[in-house]
Figure 1 (cartoon, rainbow, N blue to C red):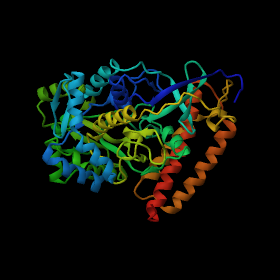
Figure 2: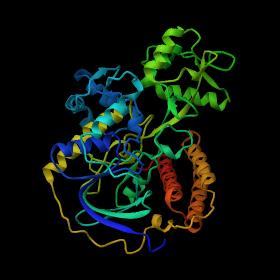
Figure 3: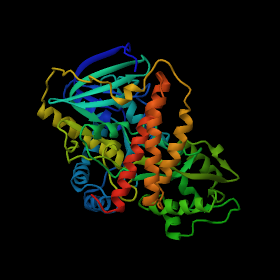
Figure 4: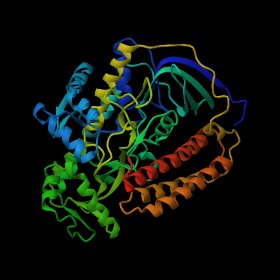
Length: 488
């Protein structure tokens, strides 16, 4: 790393990293309490998040259904009981949240979502509203290192626009950066979901759990970049066919559930079916031939999709990486286990290590509920110390990858190889032997990156994504090995 890079240092009592629903909810409730904070995002605008891209269908179980949902999430998704109990026993906070913001909502099959002319834009409406109630987020700030001190955390950022490093000392740290699904070639995530926060949290003492648990979504179009909502998928009446129009999905119970748009607890089964089709090299299509064309056009318009995706009355579909469920272990107050005054929320937290890892609609509910609980905890505790410790005597590894002189190392080629390797890792038939081989391959690649790759600006961002991606892959392997040998 070149020593003449400009560095900036400052203090903030509370640092929120991430501008999805989880980070913005914390900021909103802190603002309500007139508590000062700083909120950052690695992207060029705070709206570039998975939450902004989502429909914001938010799970709010009825009083009679709360126990069933809690047990379902524990038994089917492997969730922590104390965390999931806290979430759903406080789900009334979601309704209050919508009403405080003045956002009208409609009921869905498992909760509520913002009322929109275009159903897929609920997240956009919610995020736009929240941004009007909080401090202006700092954009283009990539978190590259964390260090623990007695009274707080020192966070090191790289500003991609200003081409400088920024050091922020804080008493309270909120990690709301999402997971690592963006490391896969086929994903519908914001480009920022690359997992570096999880790796850095572990560096300062956090525990990671369930890192091999990811959820693919069955109804993606445009090479995995967009997901069809159930209201469109249901028009197929559950008829998934091959190129010749022959029905591939034979389970009538699942077909009926898809037709009713009530399949959400069966996604695991649907994905297993799709995986079998892929192994047999069969392309899959939603058969829309029996759908009324007027209704089809109206439904597509309502949900914000282009009818150009329908060809010969069929829609080609493929599963895509939707989210990662493993993450940072927290307690019932969203505090990181082993770390004082550090919180993890949303996809950055551990959600579950079985099946899909979480149930549909949980993401927005958790972001809102834990956002309030985190803000309340900080407001009630309020331990602040503005004296910033001197540290970072030696530049951390990510900083050593920086140089104003860009070299011609083929980063994109290595990123594609890493994505393919990660897909192999999460495949059901990964063996312990193959895990060992993959680990050696990753470690060799890491050594190459550290010794050969340098850059600044956007290239440095790509280098960091690759650098942390290898650590994410190693965490996936470690989780798989623990499961294989019954450890943990």
